[in-house]
Image (cartoon, rainbow, N blue to C red; front, side, top):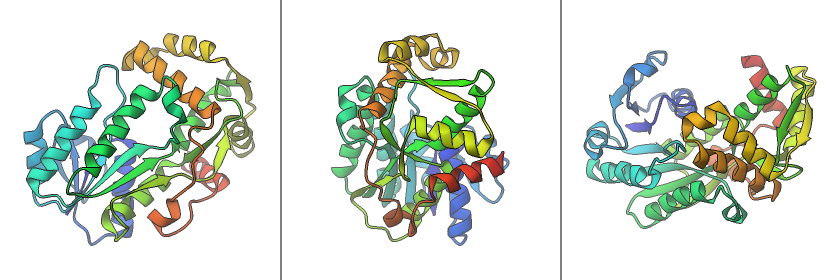
Length: 292
């Protein structure tokens, strides 16, 4: 059996859908805190499991051969390293053999920014896996194209999109493409004990804004902010405040600074993971437009 943890999130759902399509013979287990959240995905066994409880995760992973460990969300005050260690200890107790951990791309330059605190948790979990006996795979995910495009589409009402990322190129990818590659990593025969950068082509945010304008019929101008301006903007964002205030504001500002510095412009291992090249930026955007 194959388990996907934090299964009600965007990546968890995309991975479950891809598994059903590509590996329909494989029994699939969705592990999440509230199993009722997956009522819209039939044919999948759901089990309750919380990273905060080794016992609940151990019970949820009984009989599982391979699992996708979706990283805990970046929320202010959350000890993501301990939560990931809990999930890995539960996997060890349950006899799981293969673990695919969803991390974040980066060439190290991001450690010079305020995104470093978030990235350190990702890299520590990678180190914990490397020291384990699992058949481990680290899937270093690119930036969710879906989310940035949603923000750009929402910005059409005011006519401009602001960030401090400038002309720095960044590896973007749609969540559907990530789910496809992750399904192959966990269920296929891909080489273990290595990292895979799951990204499509690199693109700058201004260039992405122009492409989104063309494909979605928008009229959005890109406006460059300074790092200080972006930080102040994030501090005033209600959604940022709800996720943890200053810590999350610093994370977002640091992320965009990292983009500008080229920290997330990395070579792609998508074809090695998925068995085919990643769809082009235009193809992914057209697919997002079709989905609405």
